[in-house]
Image (cartoon, rainbow, N blue to C red; front, side):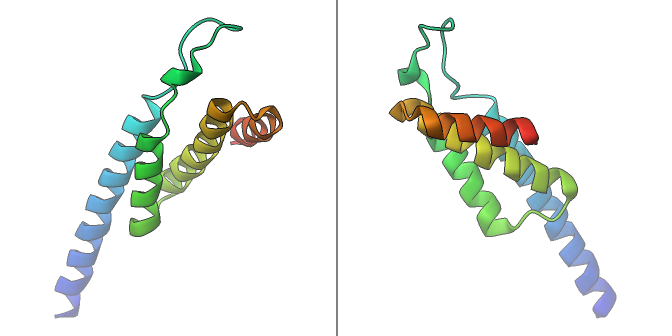
Length: 102
């Protein structure tokens, strides 16, 4: 029946929302550079967790404003981390600008 289909779809989307928020929160909470300014350990920067969380969101498609915002934050943070690891300072500056705009 149509009512059951709608309920199943809503439950599926809610589960996907929770999965995306949890993945985003975990990925954003780890993998940052460590150390003081001027002596940051760029080797500590990890991009794999963010890449996996972004891929999950690409597959599941964020629907809520919160998930869409987290996706944008993750994408900008991923660009920032990749630029930082590579020492690409112009790319880092652009990525930082994107993060600040969010």
